[in-house]
Structure formats: C-alpha cells, structure tokens
Amino acid sequence: MAADGPGSPRDRLSAGLRAAILSGRMRPGDAVPSSRAVASAVGVARGTVVRIYDELSGEGYLETVAGSGTFVSMSVPQRAPNHDTGLSDEAPMAHGTNDPSDSPGRSIELRPGIPSTASITRGDWASAWRRATAGEVAAIYPPAAGLPALREQIARHLFHSRGLACDADDVIVTSGAREGLALVALGLSARNKPLLRVGCENPGHVGSRAVLARLGAELVPIDVVDGGVDLDAVQSARLAALLVTPSHQYPLGGSLDVGRRLQLLEWAARTGSVIIEDDYDSEFRHGRRALPSIASLDDSGRVVHVGSYSKVITPWLRCGYVVARDPAVRAAILDARADVGETVSGIPQQALAHYLESGGLSRHLARTRRAYAHKRGLVLDALGGRLGSSLELSAVEGGLHAVLSSPVGAGNAHLAERLQQRGIIVSDLARHYLEPTPRAREGIVFGYGAATDLDLQSALAAIRRETT
Image (cartoon, rainbow, N blue to C red; front, top):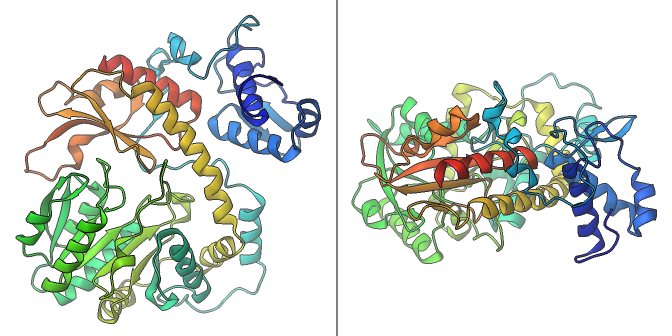
C-alpha cells in the first residue's frame, strides 16, 4: 500500500488505498486489513490508520459494519483489476459509466447547505446523549432562553471560534437559524410598527428572505458589491434592520473587510438600526483564518448574531442560537419566544451542552475541516481555470459550497436545468436574486460537503462537460 515514495507515510498510505480501490485491486465488499495489521506493515501509528479509514469512509470509499470490520464500499463502481498503473483520484471521471446520466433514476445531490455527517457517530456523540438521558426526566418546560449549561457552552465556543465575547445571558437557544431569524423579526416588528423594513443582500439566502416575508417584513434589496452589501445603498435605504452574511457572503462568496464592517456599525449606531449577522458557515475557512464576527466589534449592542449547528454538526439536531447583547432587543426576542413557546427539547439541549463541554465538537470540526478542504481541492482541480472564459468559479474561500457563474446573457441561464437532466442536483443562481430586481450573473450554486469523493468527481465531470 505505497510504503515508500513521495509525501509522508500517512499521505502515501491514504493515496495507496484510494488507488487500490479505484483501480479494482480492492473490489466492493472486500474486507480492509485491520488497522493494527496495516500500522505494523507500513510503520505508522495505529491511530493514524484509524483516521485514514475514517476519512476514506467519509469520502465514500469504505464502509464500517459494527462488529464485522471495515469493507470497500458497495457504492464504488466495480471495474476489472488494473495492476499495471495506480489510478489517480480523478480516474472515475474518465469513465462514462460514472456519469449519473448513464444510470437511470440515479442522481447526485449537490444542493448547498448539506454537511457531511460521516464522522459524527463517534464516542463523543454517543457519550453526550447517554449523559443527557441518564438522569431523571424533568417535569417542567425548558427555560425560554435555553438551558443555562448550553448557553454557557455556546458563549465559550463563540469566544474561541468567532472572537465574540458574550455572556450566557446574551444567548437564546433556537431550533435553527431560521427560527432564530423569525424570533428576531417578531421582536423587532413589535418595536417598528406598522412595518419592519429589512435590507437583504441581493443575491442572498432564499430561506432567510422567505421567513422575513412570511412575517410581513418589507424586503429591501441591497446589491452585493466586492463581497458584501453596497454601503451607499444601505445609507440611503431607511432600514430598521439589515441582514448580512459578512464573513462568507451567500451565495457569491467574499467578505466585508474591517473598514466596511466599522462603517456598518457607525451607520447602525447613527440610525438606530439593527444589523442581523447570519454566521452560517464561518467555522469553515480554507487557507486562512476567518475574520472575527461583526458582533465582536460592536460595543453598542446594535448587532444581533444568528447561528446554527446545522452545518457544523447536522440539520437533524435542529439547534441554533441568537446572541443579543442589547437588553431591549433581547427582551423583545424573549417576548416573542414566550408567545410562540419553546421549540427545542431539553434532552437535545443537554446532549449538545455535554458534546461542547467534552471537546467533542472541536474534534469533530478538526476532522470535517480536513475532509472539506480535500473536497474543495477536487472542485478546484476540476473547475478552476479550465472552463470557458465567461465562467467564473467563486465562493471557494470558505464554507461548503461554490458558485459557477457568468454575466447574464452568456448562455448559462439554464445550466442547473441541464445538469438536472444528467442527474446532478444543484441550485439555480437566479433563485437567489430578489424579484423583480435585475440579475447581474447567471449560473449555479452547488454544495460539496456531503457528497462522497466518487460522486463529487462524477458530478464535477458532468459539470465540466456541460460548460466546455
């Protein structure tokens, strides 16, 4: 398994296993040697082999069966053994049988916003849930703002990961970012009658806009310029609130630099407006450290910070948070919570608190960051600099998605539809523009976090064929 050659022993072993599977030397269903045996044969620590097996499981090459061992995944396309050459990671892209359009009924899900959960089922996660269910069952409702232990852990995590110094009392536990945004909108609406005017990035997050519109807010489109909202447009829009994704603009990518963040804070302080900061995927930054949150620069409490564990852990958990440091804003949000009732069960709150306290989340993030960086590399290798001159790959500096787009009129308005016919499910960039404003770009938004390596490579090959 590539005991010598370029790179570290860990890299050689990982590459050798991939090559053996892709070349057909290891077939679907074949048992993989035990981690102890491989470690002894190759001369690396057993823990290194375990981590490699975990990564390859997350990439779709391996499957672990409790009590039986680790096997080559049955989803790997079977091919005749090739003992002459070690195929590269891109080998499947050259085979027509790996195009989903060659397999009727099969599709590859690349819609943005779906994380990988391959490394969650670990001791940390199971232990947290055992501890959460070990005690007596409470006979009362959870506190409206959330369990104190969880709020304390969220505050600590935000300080270390986002530079946001807040107290546990500033944190309100929610069932996710959308419910957090809904509570903020309900609270602000009570203070801004008869109509709450909210500025929204254009293009921006479809789901967030839908929540605000459903609650009767007036949506004011603010064009995205150089990775963030157009500050001149913000100044003249007469807004009660502004919803932004400043650390990784959704969907186009880019971020607001410190100078523009400070200008936004000055605008909010001068006008009495509220900045709603959606920190949706800032845990994942590729190549450099993420900018601290806008809320970390705010001394006046004009920023309400909204976050979620849906992309960090899993959407199935349905747990997020709002950080509101202004007492009046926080009171208005809690009033809204009192009206709609508590939505997050106490047991998941207890489990998440234990998971954070034990360091389980930090370890999970370390694993997923490596996996996402690897998948991002596949995207860059397949689509970076190899397409028509009108197409541009963007939003790859962080997060779990990328954008492939061109100026309007370049012939890519129906790219998402053409890919769907091939079995590649992506999001149409046009959906993210607020109607009826004109669109500046056309193309697709696609996620790469949840797909296995093999599926992602097949999908990228199809995208490349449709765009070259």
